Length: 138
Image (cartoon, rainbow, N blue to C red):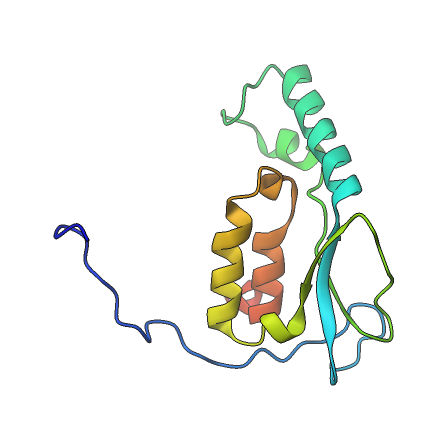
């Protein structure tokens, strides 16, 4: 390990359990469910973002006005559903809630998903804010 890198304590993140609520039936999730996103729609969103960037003459990150930001294509939406409401989707990226029960788990999934080439076409950051209640603090 690099001596210049400060190692964080093992318990730097609270192991607080996440209370999941189904996006479809709006009931607390008991007995299982999944976080999911349709990768077909994510690919379409990537295409729209690329087209928008080319049309606006912006290669990647550049200065944009508030109006331009509002006109930008929306990121694809992550959902969480209980087992009763969760539809089967062959093209979905799915995370079983048994693998995402604590805030520590969510951070781990964030690091994992960040490495996906389609991550920036999704609203995972907003999803995390919504799930953790951080959007109210912003």
